[in-house]
Amino acid sequence: MKRTADPTYEYTRLPSGRCIRLLNLHPGPPGFRCELVPQSLDLISSFEAISYIWGDSVKSDSIMIEGCSLPITKNAYEILAKFAPKAGTRVLWIDAICINQDDDIDKSQQVRLMKEIYSSASRVIIWLGNPPEASLAHDFFSQSNSQFPGKASDEAHVSSTTINDKDLGQLEFRKLLQHPYWTRVWVVQEIVVARAAHVYYGDKFWGWRQFARIVRALLTEEKRALLRKMSQLEGLRVSHFVGVEKISTIDEIRRRYRKQHHDDLPRILINFCDSCATVERDRVYAFLGISSAATDNTLMADYTKSDRQIFEDVACHSLRTELPFLYFSFAGVANGIKADTWPSWVPDLKKAPEIRLPFPLWDFGKYTASADAKPHIRILEESHQIAVNGVIVDEIAVVTDMKSVIEPDEAAQLRQHGRFMTKPAMLAFCQRELQRHEEAWEIAKQRTQKTYTLNGQPRNEAFWRTLLCDMSSNPIPSEFCSNDDYKEWGQLVNTLLQGLEMRKGRPTDYRSEDQPNLLQDGTDIPFLDLPDLTCFPLRLSLSSFRRQFAVTKQGYMALAVPGIRAGDIICVFSGAETPHALRKDNGAPDGKYRLIGDIYVHGWMDGTYACTTLNISTFAHQF
Image (cartoon, rainbow, N blue to C red):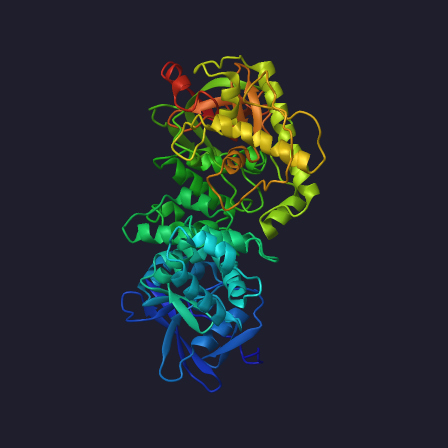
């Protein structure tokens, strides 16, 4: 129904406590009638909660309540029209209508109850829209689930016969995986706490368990072929992989939650840092109820607070957890924090989707840079600073000029097609990668010993281990076979360049310092297979993505966050898994620094260095 000249509906303030509004839907005319009724969560018998995306924020439609007009969005109106009963009454909860979105006090009270609202509902309706060909996606899901039961022969069958760019069912399937619903912050909690959840796409629905099982199956080795083949079809975007991963992650959290395990809030925020929120503080509030921070009163939803206040409260909460420095990988000058506007130790969640962050070191393996030392942190709330015990162990001496960066036009190709589409783009990427590694290797030869200090490794081995952050497909350290893998990676890049007929001469061989390997022939080899998460090139890309190779004054090799520079100091905080880079504040007294970010220093990550220093002297650093 389009807007009318009727008087606008005015919300009445709800009593404090566990009171919410429910929307009663009755048959028309015309279509349906609405009634907004206050109810106590403790007394409600049955209702359904809607999980959806707002879409266009323009309130182009309206509903009538008590003779007054309430403007609502097009998506909200379509949902009401879809689920309006033919007879009787249907009781719904939908945030755009049941919360007064123009009243921060009402919004704060209701958001605090959001977890209980969705967990109390008889079912959660996940609404993905009603496109004309939605039924084809259901057919495709049914076929893929029954046709590929997980046998080893599936991949060949999928690759040869299953995928067809003319198949409308596959196109609808891809649309579903690319649906913006999976990128919204609130949907995670709404699904995780639901007693029962039904995924509606058109007139049909899946139960969540069935839906998630089918999607998770696409991540198994046998069924990756389906996604891999689909990635070659014209028009497909890499976002379908993102959809699969988001759905799988939500399901994992849901299964842990149902076993009474609540994930740490900082870890959830990092996992969903690229999700979207209409209101920035919802990047925190959307996950509170399903995290271990649900009972922390300092984080209670309050829309009268500024974004900075809320984000600083989260950082303080993180510092009180068992892994207090985990959240530091999301903060620091390298992550866009400016000295004059924001504390360097507080992540700015608003910038997370825009800044292409290096992958956090704690995600690569179990590092123990401070050995068994316990964290000692004081929060200086009045000055928005923290004091952390730790030891300054070294200083950056030299940094490479080049970071591992994919140019915007190349990133667009990868997002759209999952691969480089032109030889010039592939060439440019390979040339930069080779140049970056050659530059790093020259610095390593000039600034480090042939036999690496602390562990006695040959310099070339220490070099490739540094570029990998000593990461492997198993717990660190990396298997020695990665030595040959790195050599083969260098040969692969050179082969590509030769195959493109744009580079002549000898390729660099990082396995040996004396015997470069001359490749005799060049062929155009696929360089990046995105779905293969265990391949060496991808491990190398993950570890060094947006990191700069550096050497310290004491001759240690390091991988640092972007923006690191000579003179920055390296500190091991007591209780931290990894070292961190700090920078002296201009004009600040001794002992006051700004956080730059985490840093991998080869030979320090297992506590070897910390054991000889941390127990002797520690210093409190404020930043």
